[in-house]
Length: 264
Picture 1 (cartoon, rainbow, N blue to C red):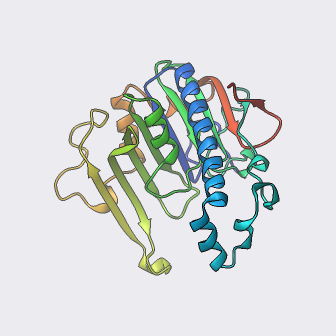
Picture 2 (cartoon, helix red, strand yellow; picture 1 turned 90 degrees about the vertical axis):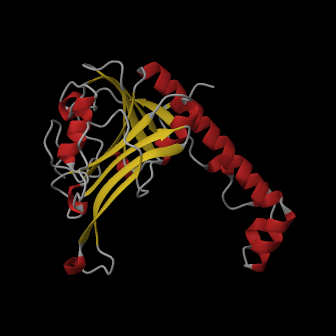
Picture 3 (cartoon, rainbow, N blue to C red; picture 1 turned 60 degrees about the vertical axis):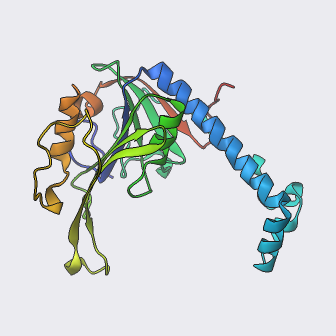
């Protein structure tokens, strides 16, 4: 495993969220969001068990467990590992990319929230998003942080054969801007690979003017250089976010035992 700890491109996909708010406010919003998600999960599970129509429908499908009481279910909601908090400052120079260790946990299982040494008014969240074209965590946080925009990015490094670049802006759960550029293989045949470029929504204040000229090729809609231009437009850079010493404080939220419980 080759993991860069500086500003190199030896990674596959690098997913991250930027929020123009201080680390304390974002951490509080993250905790609130995760608490709400856990409550929603328990509510859905309870409704699945207790709603007669759903029970009958699942029974017809042969899903007999749906007819059992919660305490008889093979997987109890209480057995689902809750998010706990770890001090991630010591290892924060290791990229939280698709190739990094972090117990191979994906976006719904682990992510890192960091304050930035040279941009303390921004907070960085590193994750490994598995849903294409949508960042669920960014969307949820935009609801919790009402009135604050949440920006999501995906960069592609040298370790992927299928480049995929994203830039989204979320407001109150809505995706008001989605710029996407990726290689697709509709038939699975590498010879059929083609570029897909998407420009949805309106140009935001976060984007430099003239990035998307008329008649732009799908392969040129977005790339690492354009993402770097967006960062620079906002007083940031790849180095500001990811070079050694870029993070002054980091907290890792993960669905695993051993961390501190989230405060109530």
